[in-house]
Image (cartoon, rainbow, N blue to C red; front, side, top):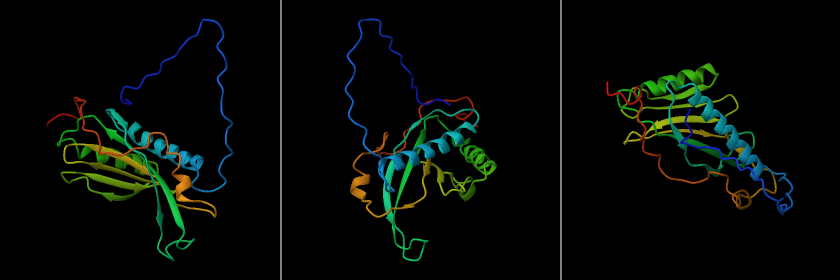
Amino acid sequence: MQPGGAEANVEIHTGPPRRPLRTAPVPAAEPVHGGQAERAEAAARCDRLLRDTLDAVRPELAWRHGPTRTGTRLLAPGSGPDGGAVHWYVSRSLDIVTVISPARRPELPGMVAAAWQRRGWRLTSVNAGRPLPGLAAVTPDGYRLGLEFGPLGQARLTAASPGTAARPGWSAEAADAAPLPGAGGGTAALPRIRCAFWSALG
């Protein structure tokens, strides 16, 4: 899998000892649902689901990180065990930057659907035969995944955490005070990398 050209740089220091950096005290973890630590954990779980999905696709697809989204929703009274409690969620996404020709587009949902089903994830929507194919599934622990194409050939893979009820003392303002790494918005990236298989016209 090609993570958009990321690389690691290692610096070796051979001069005189450097002064130790001053670090601020580490704040105590928040004891409520929706805190930064819990949201980061949910985002990491979403990332693993996305990578597991793309690892099952052959030939490999080039990709880059898409936006992270966080939010809250209020369930309808009686629709869940905690009634109308406020629920928070996190979603992560990957934009596929390999050019996938119209002739190959139905094949990607097929590979992804097979990978999800092998892992025991339940398909909730399949539109593999349409000009803009799409696919959705849910994991046994409630994480939701989706694959969709845009009108210009963009493809985005998304994973979202299940809604988690906030405990007393939680507030949306506190939860949103420190955004998750990689947070942002925008449309899916336009594909730009050609592949002998995925970009083939016929």
